[in-house]
Length: 332
Image 1 (tube, rainbow, N blue to C red):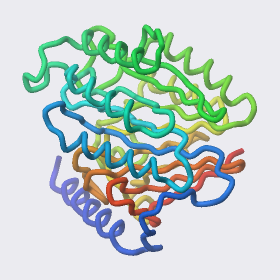
Image 2: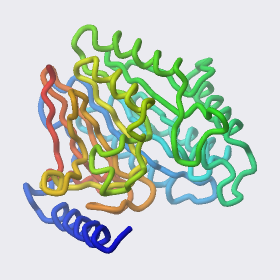
Image 3: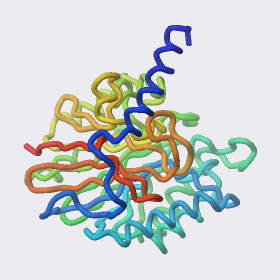
């Protein structure tokens, strides 16, 4: 990183922090309620929980967050946990998070595996398993939790008649530390599920831990953290762009909650529509974020109405809504 790039990133960080903290549009009281009446689907979204079996605080954060979701005035229908469930891909931590989800999560859990759950097998000598073994563990715990018999790290489910499609790493040719790899079978699965889910005009939600390069401020927050603009990535985006009302939900960046103003002025939005697909980048829930609201416990509520989808960032530990970071997307 050269000096000019460092200055730009430092300036962006300070502005993102300042413009998210100041009471632009205000901060709502800690009451979980849908923004409007007639909410058809109410979804809590978190990512990057980074649970460690021998580190109780992050597990406690999840229990506290789930408790607040459970007491929402507008019942929560589903909870997306968008990857990096664990910190070091070890089975005790994977068992711990599924135990917490099973016993405390309100609504239908949509569990996504991230690079720390597969690619970081063997990280810091926490586990001596291979990436292939870590992938097998992810699939095993998925099947036990859902009562399923999946053989691959991707699946779909429906909540209130709305389809959620989960994509994941398949560890091709030994896999990667931080990147994702998918087979053609997974891409074909995505295409087929999108065709089914959007057939009646409803929105469909694609959940994958990795963002795309250059979207939602990825190149400023953490350049190189997203799926590269390659032939493979083009297929994923190209498939989604064939359909209307597709929402892509990701984590990984640890980007924090940034205000709409920061998104406009520094090209660092938390959510934006590109070529007809709406991309939502979730902050880190379990460990510190880089920009804007940097502390733990942050995520976002996604509310689906007949004509639009509203995304509202929130801290699930404190219950505070950040109204200067709210987004509304019209359905077509």
